[in-house]
Length: 166
Image 1 (cartoon, one colour):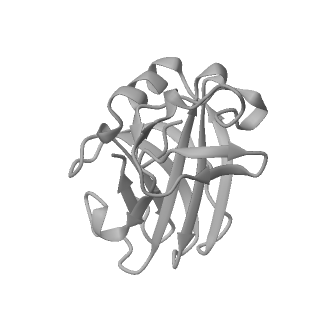
Image 2 (image 1 turned 60 degrees about the vertical axis):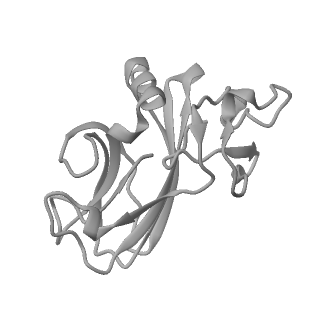
């Protein structure tokens, strides 16, 4: 399972459950159940850290982003179904209008490679899966640090908060 910080989680019917404070290769998790979230599909990853990616306005490029808003995101890759699953939480944001996955290293602004679901409000969350091309899943798996998630809003149409994958 690749998670936006690359967050490795044990999965249950309630969704991802974090494994605290260790690096682990999710591919080594046994096939007997713990790596089969959402419909029993296998989840893949490279090495992952047990922490979600933090989203802040100071990370937004070009800035300025929202100075007081923040958020966190966890991303899972489900290769069997060519899906990217996202758990996103935002706080202190004016009306979110869009959430995107972009391809660019830290400090740069890159092209949108995938539209992600947006929360209903500025203090909200969303959990959903979206279809993604297999080639994108492979790039995310092999070079996650070349991607970032950002949340757009009415007051910050170019991006309010951002977090670089690791």
